[in-house]
Image (cartoon, rainbow, N blue to C red):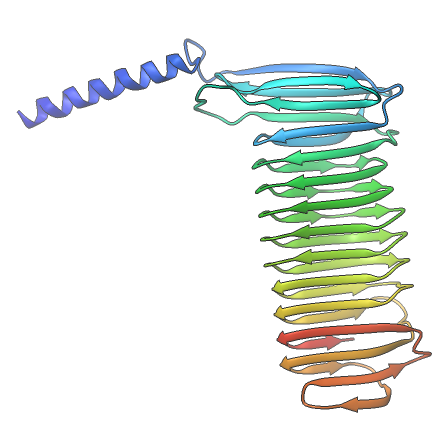
Length: 308
């Protein structure tokens, strides 16, 4: 009797699943991907706007000169690709379907020519955004809960934020400022070079910056996390702050002349070179190196400080 009931439950479940899949468009080739693509001429286009929603998006250079290629793979009754152009702005939008979608997640790929110099604006909800060898004018991105990962990026200005996701850029070159922030996530910016300043902010997460040079100020702050800064050349002031975490600065090239202003409520303060006019208390350490032309300020409530 018990076995018969179990069999009937299995049959009913199979029928229910089949009905749901049929209602969502999963008939016959239910789990086979469908590819749609759109090509747009970029003559007269000064801005590319990508509204990815919950879809993962991949951006890459190497596309055909003067053209943008947007390609999306969907499964079942997935979202629709909508590409439009108006007043010099190309918008690539993902239209969410009204019904339920079950199965593999869709993905969006956007190919840009190597010589594209217009602005790129990226908006993402819960999808991750990745890019490789991307060149643009101003680049901005705003993400809800997705990660933003780039292998190589060159732009006139870089400005990005995510609410709860990680930001990682392996190599970045900007003619202007670089500003990145996350509410709950980590920031890793490597091999960075900025013609302006660099500002990285995390509410809860570690920050790591490896910079070849910055023409402006460098400001790194996190409420809860460690901060690691390796800097080859800096023409501006340096300001590091963390409420709970360690903070370290390493000068990869020649050390600039600077005034050190270090404070830790509960932690050690280590400086690997000699200072003049040294003033030191249990909480603070101040001194001058070289001509003292720049300011190095580090604050942590609970953590160690290291400068070398």
